[in-house]
Image (cartoon, rainbow over all chains, first blue to last red; front, top):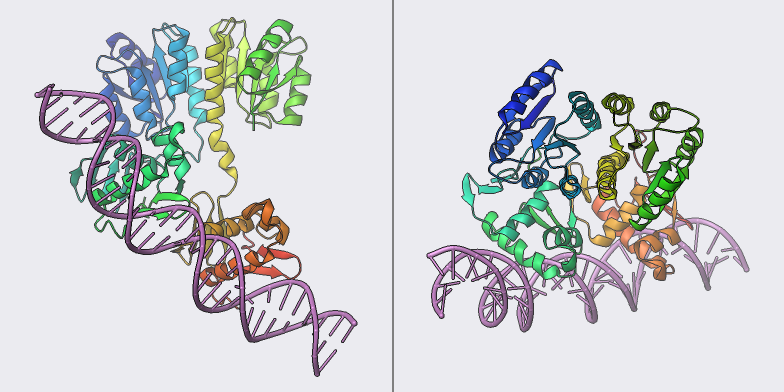
Length: 231
Length: 231
DNA sequence: AGCCGGCGTAAGGATTGCGTAAAGACGCGT
DNA sequence: ACGCGTCTTTACGCAATCCTTACGCCGGCT
């Protein structure tokens, strides 16, 4: 099976060039020309690698990396015309695995692609971008939540909290972990926030908020989202 | 615990420079000036990351990578004065994870170090997170316990005690060890707590709490969890 | 036999943590 | 400036957990 590579790049010339080169090297190629299109393709096909141009027309490449990292651990190699060091650092810290400046050599790109693919651990689960729990469906790629097919509106904090639980579905997350990743390291003491927002989530998502079946509380420890076993 | 980085570099200036920089960033540094010395240090201390200069006096850097890869999968970042593309390709294909050309920016190096260490993260999940004993299953990663497929609710102390036994499955843990790791060093005398909570665990987990088959007591010494032999 | 230390069982009260509600504060767009 | 949605703060009733105390059992020792 040929590895599938997703190329997110708006310049036609580079796209055409890479299309030929990557095909010759035995890769199967997906193409996208905008950030939104690229994210959608990544969610639908779960490629083995993403080549990302930072200079996209509709959104900053940085946000593409961040949005991707909200649900996927696919290797990302950035291709950018920006040679400045701060650009590299922010991209790498946002979750990119490598950073090449244009113009780049084909041989080096290929070698770095091989490194990235080699890095992909066999145990690296190809997580689906949508987590299901009973009548709930949490689409981490689209940032949307639905209950029994009906879309549910969540406030930003409500979604962040639910997404954090969904990313580790089945596992217990401590108060500390949740507060740190949702509210930031400074709010690690405010357990009250969690109770309030868990209550709000249960009101919107559970059939009987007083007797939750998926948003479970582990008294004295934290909370967890109980997903469908057939994940 | 500070990550340990092994620096294999013969030039004193660069070594001194990186020593200061890496220490300031919170890393613990090992240093080697030759290939043979570097390989020996890597074998003895198993660092979290290797920074490798290709221009070593006693051997080619390439062979260092190859020798290292014969037994270790530690991330290797190459620091080289060679800008030629074939050099990069051969180094990366030999097993290096990244390649920076001198002179490099400190910020970029730090970012790439963070990438390499982040990448190594899934590697430490090599330990089996689920301990089995008969119809019991203890998932240490999810902090959940099930008996015959049915999830069992445990209070924080009950779980902490069981987890401590499961982490050392098969071995006898003394009263002292258990009390210190679960209740804290101040409660080392209260053997009573152990009896109470072991009884509660047996009620929830054993088929016949009066005749335990997995949560065994070693009279006068401590307790132990008897796991499946096929673990 | 009788005493005693180690172990298991049971139950009650104190403490802590959790869920709910409501009101004030903040930011944002109209 | 106003209203709206959202986030934060505050207060209180309830449930879960934990610690304490008490008692029965078994084996070894005097």
